[in-house]
Image (cartoon, rainbow, N blue to C red; front, side, top):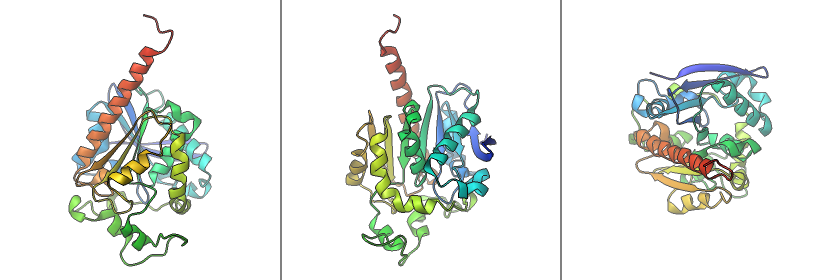
Length: 298
């Protein structure tokens, strides 16, 4: 079984997604793709072992892979979606309408990749974010890897970008042996990016430290062992974890044999199982908190 395509209207803007439901979901996992991609990133054709939708639903979680604002059906409206508040409202409203009366179990957990983490953390930092079960951010950071500094020309006191030797493809897909041959390059889920994402990319290293302290739900942060866009390793993981000062729990993980695209690499199953385990822990934590609330009948 593969994800079912859905489209809902949000104030005249069509928003699309892939949805795969569990019969009695433990929770809903909202998956937000990265840049220059669409929701198919989480359900690669012909590779069920790479699919977050299939793995999640098999383990009792409904998975909703949203085409972020400016992607999928909303692509023609990308120029209208530069305001941050508009994008956050669009995402929240779209999720409510896409799920409608469908069971949500313990609630909604947000999993985001790369530049999709901007929307995830803005949703979590919003007043509505306290209702989320938790957040997973992956393939992001606030300090670029040395290779990215050279390729993107991201240096202190210099504007972005000033490309040097190498290519963005090298950063995203090397080492290539970490992926199936037909997956490298992402042609089957590639998509033009909305114009506002250039601003998001340039400002992200400054925005991340501003948003993180506003997140009040559990956070999981993942980087691949071979991440080349952002600095990786224990120090980088600890640096990001330290930003989430209001979160009740922060867990970090380095995915062995993982590259930038964790949800589509050969270790995608291992990565997804780790995150779904964290989601389950968030489900149990919420149930425990509900039992301990004052005034609960004995």
